[in-house]
Image (cartoon, rainbow, N blue to C red; front, top):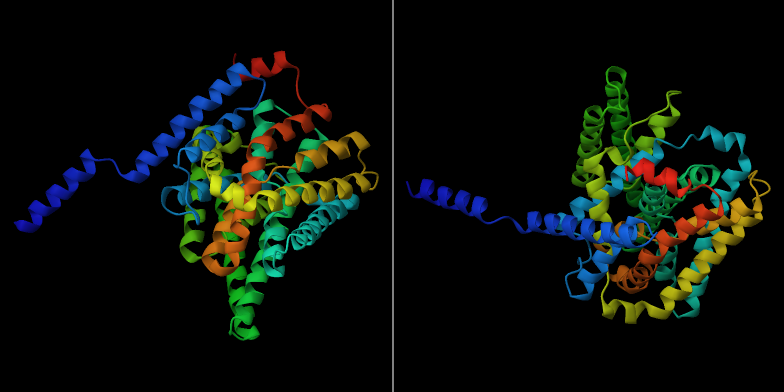
Length: 413
């Protein structure tokens, strides 16, 4: 009887008092939506800027997310970024790289040169080698969230938009693999034998690839019977991707690499073009909105002061290196100089991908990550507002934005 009474009281408490996680999600969604719509109505900037601004205000009043990510913030970030990476992977046809080896070379060059430049510049600020290398790897990828969302909202289409998707997918792949290899090397240095570290790496990578293959097969089988352009069918795919991401988190494999590989496998093992509502419709769009608010709140005045000048140096070195690599290889990549410059500007943002990689590093190597935290978080804070604007400028420079009248008609205004 006592147990039944206790259970009834517990259930009543759960019903009457909403969980902190639910309140967090509702608050993030409302704040982001309101500020995003205000920005869209009063300026010509993307709504993404408003989502981020909501996070900035929350952080300024001491309500930003804590690092490493946990709880509701971790769940939302994993799901939103995983969905975006799966989507961008499923839109990248690797045969394009075979037909255009200059683009493949550009991908490797911009990722490698930016990492080397960042590590070298941070060493000038007396940052330790291991911390400098960690920051260089984390700063390597351009975020799928920013470039994809801005292009979608503005209705952009063309060579620069497509090439930005390819480069983003590939440099994310490089960065996650590089960080995994670096962590394996450190594990060997911390007392584990190299053979044990490599065995752990092999198991982790095989598990990641296996889970990605299962997800790709599941989506393929669903697509054989359903029209993925229908939102109800897209919701099923959304559920499959979300389940795989939750499984990846539970197993302990990369929630960045797994969905990206699944999308790449799906696109490049079939000739069928995969088309579904962008961000899987309303549910995915809400998650992406919350993702921008969360990332925008991942800073504090103390972090900005601690990471300040080193972060600015990192961003300058990263932008210059990516621009030099992309523009220099523009003729080989069969693009115009204008397209090359626009593409390099579209690679400017640093956002959710870097935040998740930093969070994982903090869990795995807390002592090493301590030196990288202020630099990376300060860098994200600077570019979280500037990044979407840079992508908008790049798309306008490339001439890939539709006329305002057509864009308004598309949005139903």
